[in-house]
Image (tube, rainbow, N blue to C red; front, side, top):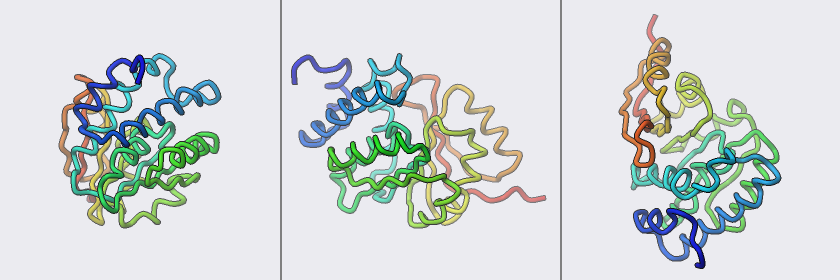
Length: 213
């Protein structure tokens, strides 16, 4: 590959993906760059750092659940992390990711890019609350830059109570979000330092129940 994007080689080397998966991730980045001019999929200032800011940020979640094969990504937007996870995780037998996105144009990007990359992803252009009950077999639920933790728990509580694990990347306000969520929910949470941002944490939710009166 000529003139690789900043950080690309280091990200792929750390992830340890195959040559075929690396090519599919290259195609994802090319698609993201092309569609960015049509629909503002990511912050324009972050596009130049797509490998270190978005791809690596997504791939770290895959390493946190090495045995999981059934993933659900809410508010998928530009496919971060869901579509990137699907591209990288396709080397696991039986791996699949359901992507839920209510915006039709973003959904079109996800569908086209999943087709081109051969990612084991199914796109659901729908509101979360309308389809969440259909994903009872999900093992991992993700959502990035979508909503505060309390709202994420409102959407995903049925799945988390059924044994799924939540992996929710959060920024510097994570402690405030945890405090707010504790006013409504009882849950077990671990804060895992992000590999890509010293101010960020991944909130891992392993159990949840409604707050007792």
